[in-house]
Length: 502
Image (tube, rainbow, N blue to C red):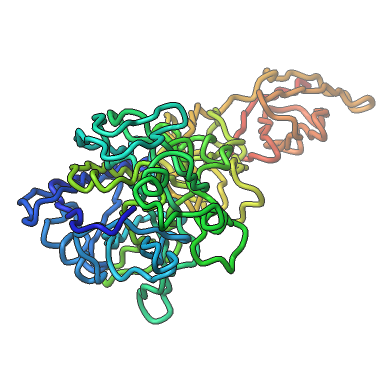
C-alpha cells in the first residue's frame, strides 16, 4: 500500500488461441515479472468453424504473431509495466497514495490491448471460460511488522510467509460499439465492463476483495501498522465500499465476477447458457459486413485490461517481485446451437400420387419468421420446391434437408422413399346378357391403397355398355373395355374387358 519504488513488468511469454467449432475456446498465457527485458515468445492461433481473430481489426487469420500483440498494446497507449492501482469501472484507474486522498487519476500502471472477433453467424456471444486461470511463483517474504494477515492468522515481525501476486490480480473486458454505416467502423468503448477477480491456483489462501475493502486484516492492516501517523481510516473504507454512491470517485465496483460466473466449454451450446443468469457475455458479434469477395461476417471488439488491485488484502509490496501467469480462455456461444427443426419425419410416397407439403417448425426461438431452405438429395427420386412441397419423380430413396434460412447450419434431414405407382384393386372382367326390356347391370368397386377420393369410369363403346359411378349397364351385344382411373390421379388407371352376350 505504500508508494512503490519498483514496478512489475509484463513480459508476454506465450499466446495461444484455439477455436473449436461454435463452442470456441481461446487460451492466452501472460507472464508478469520484474525483468526489464521482454523475452521472445511464439504465438499460435488455431481456429475452427470460420471464427477468426485479429489484433488490429483489419488482418484476420489463424495466426497472430508477437509483433501484433505488442503493436496492439502500443496502439492502446499502454505498456507492460504494472503498478498497484484501483478502478470503479474497469476502464478508468486511480492511484493509491493516501496523501492524495486516493482520488488522483492514474496515467499508467496497467496493461491493455484490443481483440477483434468475427464469425459467419450472427449474434455469437463471446464468454470468458472457467478454464481461465491465475497462478504465480510466490515470494517468501519476511514480515517487518506485527499485523493481522487474515481474520485468523497473526503474522509477527520476522515471521516468513509465502505471498502470491496472482491473489491481487484483476482483469476487465470492455465491449466496443461496432457500426457498418459506410463500412465497418469500430466505435468507442461502452460504459459497462466485466470485472473479474478469479480464483488463483497453487497460491495458498486467496483473500478475496470482491466489492468490500477491509482494514482489520491483510494489506491495509499492514499499512496502518507501518504508518501510524497516516492511517487509512474507517471513513476512507466507507467511501471505498460505497458501491451504490455513484458520486463517490474511489468506490469499488458494484459487481465483481469470479469463476462461478464463467461457463465451462461444454455449457456453451446448451441451455445452461440461457438458464444461468450469472453468465455475462463479453461481446456479441451482431454487426454484419460483407467483404469484397462476397463473404459476410459479424464482428465484435473488446479491450482487455490487467492490473494489480491496490485495495486487495493480498496487495503487499513484496509481491512486485513475483512472477504471475494469467491464462485467459474465451468461448463463443452461437444462438443457433439452441435452435432446431421439428414437425417433419421420414416418409413414404407413391409415384403418381399426392405431393407432400412439408410443414417444419423452428424450435428454440419464438415467433420465427425467417423462413426455411429445402434441398433434395436426389431430384431423380423426389424434388422439393421453395414452399417445401415434395413431388415424387422416380422410385428409390433420397433425403430432404430443411434448414432455417436465418441460421443455415441449423437443419433436419429426413428420408423420403418413393415406391412404385400403386395398382387399382377390386376389378375383374365383366360379362352381361343383353335384355331389351330390362337392361342388365352390375357394379364395380375399385380400391386404391391410401386413396380416399373418387374414381372416373370411361366406356370404350357406349353402344355396348355405359358406366356411371361404377354401375355398368348393358346397351347392346358386343365387346368393349372400361377404363377406371383415380379422379385425383388420372395417370393411375386400370382397364377391364366387358362382354355383352345377345
